[in-house]
Length: 62
Image: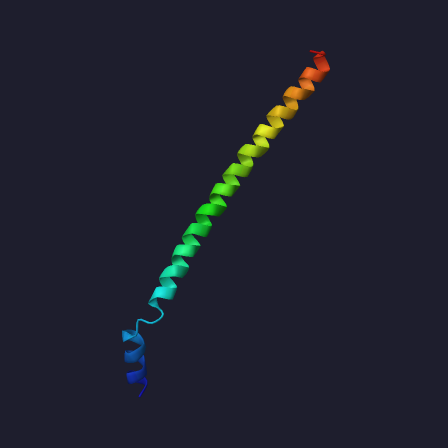
């Protein structure tokens, strides 16, 4: 009986699509997290550069 259950589970493909979609969603999510992380670092760097530029302009009076 246990062997029949295991064979039936092995041959069934009902959940295969769900697993594939979950893997795709996980890959896209990981790519988005990486992109947003790098983008936020670039934005912080740009903001810091602008702030330092404005500070130096204010200090020199130009």
